[in-house]
Length: 81
Figure 1 (cartoon, rainbow, N blue to C red):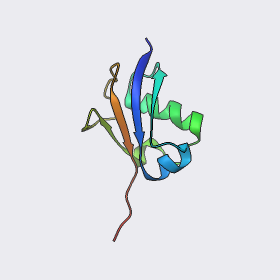
Figure 2 (cartoon, rainbow, N blue to C red; figure 1 turned 30 degrees about the vertical axis):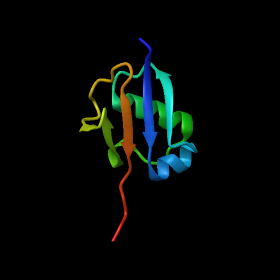
Figure 3 (spheres, rainbow, N blue to C red; figure 1 turned 90 degrees about the horizontal axis):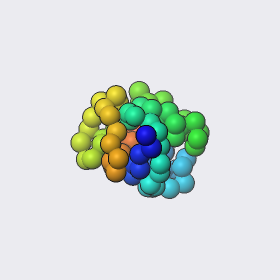
Figure 4 (tube, rainbow, N blue to C red; figure 1 turned 90 degrees about the vertical axis):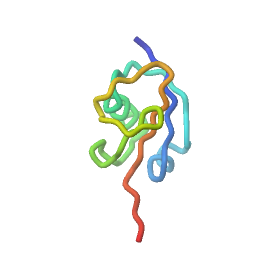
């Protein structure tokens, strides 16, 4: 089944993608499948285990199921001091 997903990128992912958000069609069933697909397509340098993922404004596990129309945010580590 093909899902329509709204993705938002921050920090290095936004820089590597060249966009802060996009809407796309995918057959990915989970957040990790979606990130793996996007990583291969856009050349993201960070592995999934270095990121947090939120679906519909809630932090969630990488294996959480995606639903049509979901808003997914991939959040890289933040440096600061």
